[in-house]
Length: 249
Figure 1 (cartoon, rainbow, N blue to C red):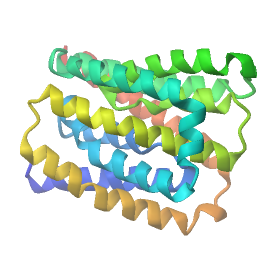
Figure 2 (cartoon, helix red, strand yellow):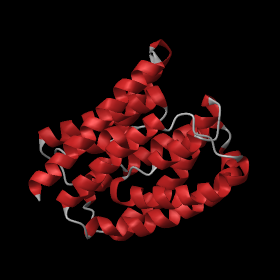
Figure 3 (cartoon, one colour):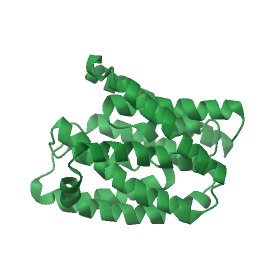
């Protein structure tokens, strides 16, 4: 964990994740996790995302000024996701790392493919809350073993017909409120070395730096083309994780 090559990879993973989050408003763990998995085990990679997820989403959520509005609208989803996240993190110590690579890679690749094909889906207002509860359950289960709890939420939010600003605000608030029990769950699970906690805290620096750099260029980038390139990159990274998992089994 303290070898220079590993530290450089960790910094680059969160710098890249911060850039993507700064450009699109989402995607930090989706980018950082597969890169981190080249140097550390999946449980350690998941633990390293703790502080960056909490701080970057907290910053976005608190700066939006609509935290209470989002909490009132989506509180059932958030409560279910919080409980499920805490319970699901216990699986990190029980599942072999090669299996976790396959699971996390499959979640990443399949979820991105679903994101690409889910455009145009709409959820009727009367079904928003019950579907939201199901999304919270799914997101918590996925997030507990991969830190990728945001993907089902993205698909759900995209189907509510929210404007871009409202969409990003709601996403950041929900992510922030999910990050708190997520971090708590990892702490309860235990077995995380103090070095990992320290590196996770330090990883906030490249993540925030990436977000600040990206904010200077976000208006100059063709969003459609950027999304397409990012989606295919994430699919490739997910398939790479799965392949490495299969080879290690």
